[in-house]
Length: 160
Image (cartoon, rainbow, N blue to C red):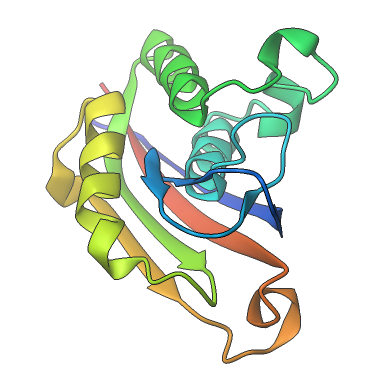
């Protein structure tokens, strides 16, 4: 009989000039990027946090502290791959992922399929098991003012 674990993740990063905008492992053309210790991939951070939460291992800040100089500028694809290895050691696999990117601009729709493919590849799962949505906040709050972006993610893990 399979056992299941659910995890929820949330991440926020400030938009700044002179940074690449990397979301879901895709570099998106835009005049600003997300500020962070790593590449600040808000989507991959939320998914990583959801997996860490499902495993009961704290949060992404505990696993990858921003005080560690060795992780300065690290690609979030590498962070997610490392968490995948931890997940597999505990004999879990992805059941499914559902994530929502909150961003006023740029449009995410043209990039969603590549984001899904990147995530599915890293987590050794089917693209059909990864759902990513994007929405605005109707010009309200820090997201609406284009000061930052946020992402929420939920993951279901299945014990193998």
